[in-house]
Length: 471
Image (cartoon, rainbow, N blue to C red; front, side, top):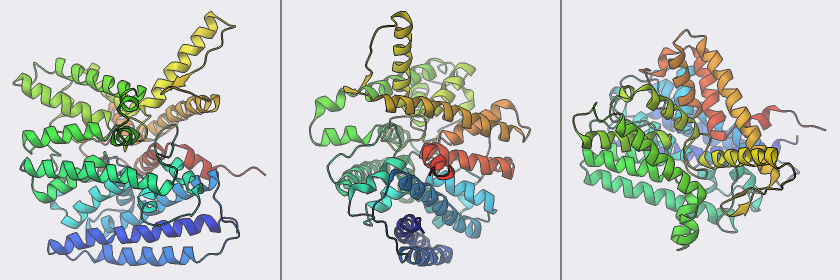
């Protein structure tokens, strides 16, 4: 069977994943809980992974289509497994637990819970740990630990999972690339964790909020999100939400002291520009709402970071902003931050390419015989990439409309339906006028779960799995 190699890789992913399930079990023990469901689930996952790795295949190399299949199947399977503790220890139905797990791993942060304070510590940890695992990609997380392939064919896995129009290796070895990426990822998370401790946030909360910020997720140990923490804690979270929205290649360039290349980045400049404009728009439209300019600035900077990074943390009621701000917020929820970051959404890089394509098409209308080359980050963009970007935008809009139609069948207002779909498909989790996603029907939850996976895996891996191979 030609798919045996694919299942072998999935088996190795499950083996790595089984060890990650031990951490929430240990957290539960520390807090005098006995979350045996995590231990049993870990052992069952390990056994399943071991059986899959015993399959023998004549093929040894992966192809692009194989990478898409492995990534898609792995994400669905780990979400199903991740839902088991939520069903057992948090008393969620299968559909609700699957939605919560998908929301965790895709770093969306949309939740089924109205009151998270009643949940066991092990479940609270698991929710944010899913963000942390999913932030850089589940397979990337496992690939950094478990050797999936000796050849660089495993690059197909990274390309299928990492967000953005293209993925490149920072160094010749894929393994070293992952080490650099995770070194940056862990370092930023640790710095935020220390700063949150200094701000007066409890240790457990600091750990969870740091993992949630790193994955640009949004699950919080409190129903009030970040609102009840100190001003310093809010500023720290705001800064790190913005930082985790930056392409990690920029941090690598800074590490090797190539500052010129780092700060010449087109994507970084546009990202910063969009962020500052969002801050300006929110602050100017809320000065009269808040009691002081400092409060308006804090809310403006925090909410702008939350929206543009697709994190979804909040420090107050986001419904206070006028219609113009809410429309811009919805736009930023869809676009999100940079490629190569931990964020969901369409990505700033694609937005730049779309505007450059439009500009070139207008030039061709005015000057039919002109030849124009599109460049990005100082390099020529191949026509294949441009066509792929246009196709991606069409599919992105089409899928949002399809899911929106299904969700609208629940009978809620158009604004509520749009907020729910944009929030889940863009992997944001922050929403207007929705107390929790438990209010939606099971059909809507299933479609929004699919939307979260489509948004996080950027459509093509899932479509590649569904489309039959041409002979």
